[in-house]
Length: 252
Image 1 (spheres, rainbow, N blue to C red):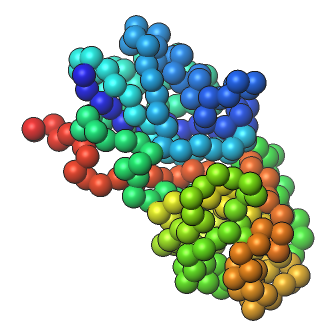
Image 2 (tube, rainbow, N blue to C red):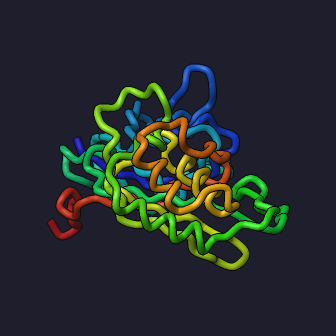
């Protein structure tokens, strides 16, 4: 039995998140069904985490076990032919039998995409801000996130997690063509954390609060103090990193 990591991109607009749901269609369900058909075997697909309804992914990772060797190019080609237009697979790699897509992840990176002018081609994947907003001030506030570890103020209430501690390695706004993108990388994320952070940074950008008040919100460790959670449609899971030693090298 061999274990593989499969890398997936999807537009999440039509899905109830990555994780299989009893009352809604998910990316995991659609992908699993397609893989079962291609491999003619019942596959148990384990994702690196969950995404909320409407959230997108440039690079989600999942692992599965399969008896035998899979030809990457042929498998991905056939799978992409079967999958709907809003889901694609782009990489397959063998990993060690104990490798785990979720628990072996070192860091995860998210992006939140904003436009300040209406773009009909990006309605489903960006948030339109048509009021004056100060991205430079928001960038200044974002740098403070790297100085803290407890992000209770940005966590969804009533979630069953052991700790609200995270280590943030990158948090910044970057302008790319007509878009502003908030990029944040951490060892782990809490439920709704990125969307809550962005919503609170917007309050900085709109001059509703200042930098000192932003610090006070973080230190309060109280979700009610933070800003609203921004819509899911602008959020992308963009990268997941793993230690090199979990991968099976071709020359082994």
